[in-house]
Length: 230
Image 1 (tube, one colour):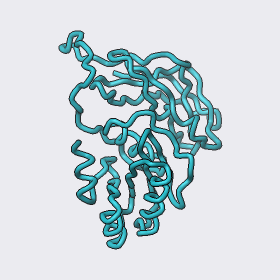
Image 2 (image 1 turned 180 degrees about the vertical axis):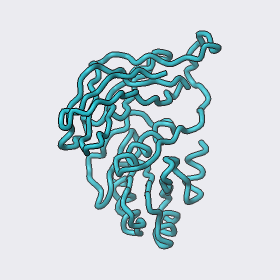
Image 3 (image 1 turned 90 degrees about the horizontal axis):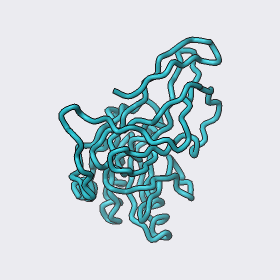
Image 4 (image 1 turned 135 degrees about the horizontal axis):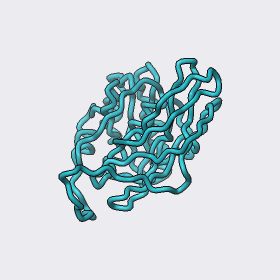
């Protein structure tokens, strides 16, 4: 079980009991961000503040995960305090004993997160890229014409959380930007793609994924199928 802390909304004084979310480390161990008493209202979202570094107690890998947040019924977004550079305990099954970390463990099934907001869509895409093996996911240096850009070593991704299907121009802009950075690219869209956009992606070699509301990226073209299976 992940730890829980009492939380009081500074706006309406309503009390909550917040339980930290659990995420899958690439080694297979579930990890949770450590929590501290304290909360602050988020009035402006800043990308760098929306992530927290968590260390897996099983394999020692340090990864970035969404900063613990809670939405109060009054409409205030509450950001839960976390200790600086404190490893989170890996939750272990009572029957698992003390397994030896495997430097190349088999990949477990992707753990989806329900998409309710645009930020959830970006989080799912970042988690999926990390599940594929890309580390150090960060916001891309260049902002795409629409949506949010994510980057990792050798990869550029675009996440479009709007209700408009991606167009051929959207795909071309991502491909051109990736070419200038000598990187591969991948596109995630919440509303899917036009027929022309799919054809353009196939011609340019861009994997396309659609984000369903359950939080599982679904491959749209064969390139995405290949990427998700390797």
